[in-house]
Amino acid sequence: MNGKRYSRQRELIYETLKCSHQHPTAEMLYSWLKPENPTLSLGTVYRNLNLLADEGAITRMAFPVERYDAKVEPHSHFRCMVCGGVYDLELPYDRHLDDAALLASGHDISRHELIFHGSCCNCKQKH
Amino acid sequence: MNGKRYSRQRELIYETLKCSHQHPTAEMLYSWLKPENPTLSLGTVYRNLNLLADEGAITRMAFPVERYDAKVEPHSHFRCMVCGGVYDLELPYDRHLDDAALLASGHDISRHELIFHGSCCNCKQKH
DNA sequence: TTAGGTGCAAACAATTTGCCGTGTT
DNA sequence: AACACGGCAAATTGTTTGCACCTAA
Image (cartoon, rainbow over all chains, first blue to last red; front, side, top):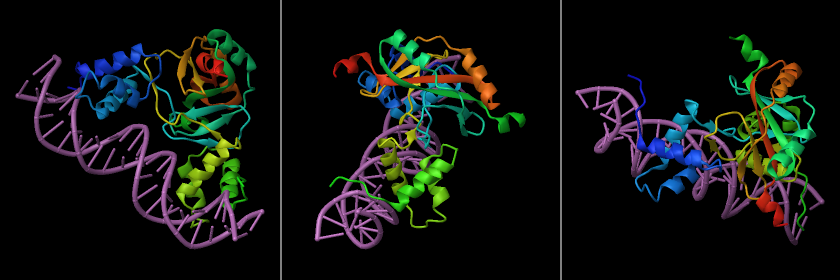
């Protein structure tokens, strides 16, 4: 009664995402697929990306809304998945990670950002 | 001729951001300041946050647009600040970081995300 | 047949911009 | 006096939703 069916559009979107390593936006996926699938609509792309993300088949990569921080020194953050709050974390910045990333990728690393997810002190008590 | 002047609004926004540790959105800052500053407009908040971020006085905390990734296993990312491209990074997931974060914060950590910034192999050559 | 899926357009939400009067220097 | 700044509202951009039709099971 609450099943999910096969859908050509979903498969298309998922396969395209899986083959691209560009971490595309919904808009990008749409523009790639549209030429071959003229009836495809952007709404469907968003709908299926959300479906896939909710069931854990793919990953969303961003905060939905921009946040700002007056602390400009590199430091890490914690994001509570229950209340949505964002906290600073007092962890020393680890330069070794940048070295390791350079070694693994060859890209020019200038810094990194570390974001933890979980439930915060307040929320974890409320079961 | 191209200088920046003192502005009460900018100072207000910056001070409020500095005192809050909530990593607020523009909307949140606006709602905090509006009661005491009835003429303040949301556009001004955005304008000044962008100004401050561009000059490095504050930090933006998100991708402006949602991106998706078909790889669901925890792994890290690299974001090129020149071309905006996003790449996967083959770094082993380090559980110790989660332990350290728990120890430092007391929050319930379920995982972390590591995002490197810099210029990618392609872009760094073009000077 | 029946619930889920899709296209399309309208609605919504987040952010930017143009215009024009105000404030800083 | 010049020109940056801020208020306001309109414009843009990113994302979601309602509705009527279509399709997999």
